[in-house]
Image 1 (cartoon, rainbow, N blue to C red):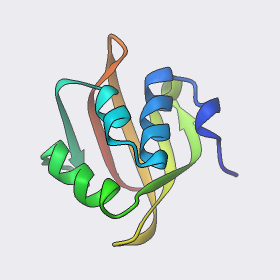
Image 2: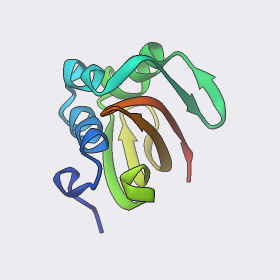
Image 3: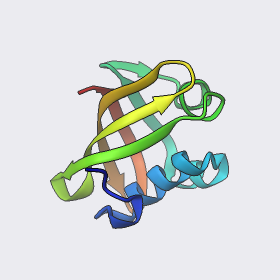
Length: 107
């Protein structure tokens, strides 16, 4: 069962997922703290290169299946035109209403 982004507990994570699903780069960037970092499958990546490749230019979409840790941990079916659909885990560090780090990888 999919959880609507509007029902996610943390407002910053909610905005992050909504921005990805809308393909809205500006809204996505607005969720990130200055100097935000990320990792994919345990390897740190350049957040701008990664999101352009994996999300925006390939029409990425998150269908959230579960949330935990006050909305800072998600399991989602992530789909893009490059890789198709994958079950992914996401963890967010939110400071002052902005995401300072997120980690994703296969679930």
